[in-house]
Structures are given as structure tokens and as C-alpha cells.
Image 1 (cartoon, one colour):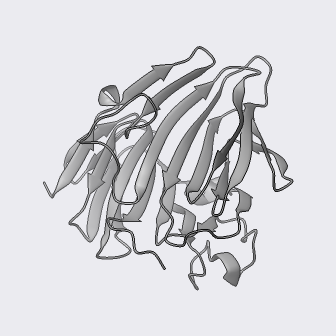
Image 2 (spheres, rainbow, N blue to C red):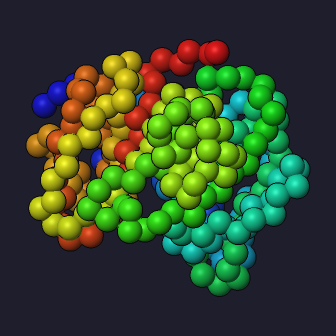
Length: 257
């Protein structure tokens, strides 16, 4: 096996606040593990469940790329940039908080839980004008292949080419201020693919949303994570019908522009 960091689902940090049940792959709030502070520029990977009618009140952030991926239900987002949006499963949301933004996220349902992944990356450009983006994905493009969710700002030729194709993208993904790519896919049992790392200086963090996969011989089950830092090509095989995976290709060292 290559140089890897395995994070089993049961080993994550956990906080149950009643209205919020959160599992944390990296140190966050009251959970601190000196061996799990980040994976390169990937700083936060929280697996959150918010009860009906509850949510995060208005609070500030700056100089962080914040990505929300709803898995079930929907969230209502509001911010001091004037946005009020409903973000549902099948969509992704990005905030480049830059010079500073206040925002809130609430469950859009009064009685059903909302489940989502909350992901933070350190940006490679500081104090930018804050921006918000939200994209609805074509589910068919993530069937038995990897669908690009996020790419670096201004990367020509990528589906999520950012400013090249316009602020809202083309329905294939969006962009962030970082040399990072996100992909996801849902696979039939025994389907095999190969993921090619985007940059030599990047690492790849794989997170199983549902089901199970073999990643270069390492079995990963639901909510397991695996960081790989020394392979250009990673073999991935689905072990269960309908297994879903999220792949984050991120710099291991941040280079501020």
C-alpha cells in the first residue's frame, strides 16, 4: 500500500448538541486531535445532521473556502451579501469568505433532518471580495463515473472553469480560490475506475459517502476516509451496489498568490 492516512468512520470526533449531530474527520471546535488537524489545505470535513427547524445562526468567517454538499433534505442559506437561497441534495454550495462574511444555515424542513457535508479549505488568495455560488448537478453525469464538482478558479478546459464560463458555471460544478479539484460518483457493484492525481504536489483524500470501495486494496466503508500522498494513479473498485464516493485533490502545502 502507498503512503496513506486512514480515518475510519468510528474514529472521528463527535459532538451531539441536540439540534446538531456532527462527526468530524479533522480537529474542530471541542474536538482536538494533534494528528488530525488537516490534510494539506483540507482543514474541515464535518458530517452534519441538523434537526427540523434548527440551524446555525448568523456568524462570521474570513479567508476560507467553505463548501456544503447536502446529502438529504435542504438548507436555507442567508448572508450579508444579500443571498437567501435553498440548497438541496443534488446541489453544491461554495462560499469564498475572503475579507469577511456573515452567514446562517438552517434546515429548510420544520420536522425532517437535513444531512450535509461541511468542508473548509484554506484559500490560495487572501482577502478577496466574498462570493457565493450554488450549482445544481446533473445526476446522470455521476453514474458509474466521476463527476467534477469543483476546480480551481480560471482553469480553462475544466468543466468547472469558473470565470472562463461565467460566475454560475455551466451546471457541472463551480470554482474556488485554490488548486483543488472535487469529484463524486455513484457506482454499480464491482465497477472499477482509476483516478489520476491532478498535480504532483497534491494529495488525494477519498471519503465514502455510502457503501464500500476498495482503494488500491484498502477497504473503505461508509464515512471512512483515506488520504493518499504519493500516487499519480489510484485504483478504485465499488464493492456494493450504489456505492458513492467523494474525491478531494488538494495541495499538501498552500502557496499564497
